[in-house]
Image 1 (cartoon, rainbow, N blue to C red):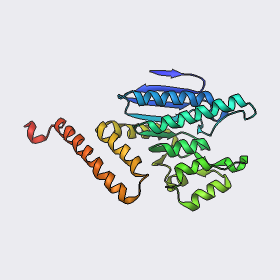
Image 2 (cartoon, one colour):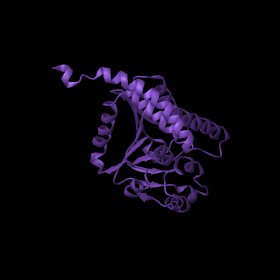
Image 3 (spheres, helix red, strand yellow):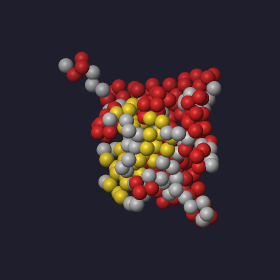
Image 4 (cartoon, rainbow, N blue to C red):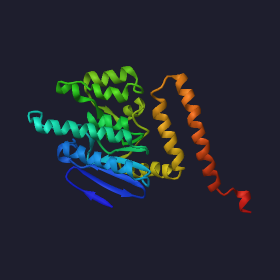
Length: 251
């Protein structure tokens, strides 16, 4: 099922929600309408247990290059702020893997979306940047999601200059899983999707939730929490093993 509108194209296929930011005339900047649509799509993912992964991409030569709001219009500014807040809240509530398929330039808010994704595959022509400093601002919110894994000097250089860097550099920073030629992007994305769909759904869900919870804990509490989650893993593992027919049992 595919639904199209002026801001986002969404398609539910084979237990995967595909979302494509669809504003190429504005370099795939997301306005209040786009944020509301993305928030609704994320909510649908949260409420549909049959959905096992989310793939987010963009139209044309752009992935996502930030927001679009008329700051001189108080009503639009308020609606944009509320929609963006809701969109980020809903994305944080998703419990299935989120994959970024970076088809082109990824700037500003696109970098935050990239950082919030579990996995990311980019084409080799994509560029990445935190251009806020060039617009009289600073990417302080981007630091929330990047400070733990982009090396300090790489991150601060990107924040201070606003200059774009290549997909290979983004890969070295830890922002991407792999970089492929543009014509191989979707073949590679679908291979990652298939690897996820081929694995036990419950174990993926428990493990993903544990990762994000552990990342916020100091080491001692992390170990204690890990032992608690291990019990859930063992229960899910036992259920999974009962579904697997062992070769000797099939003879």
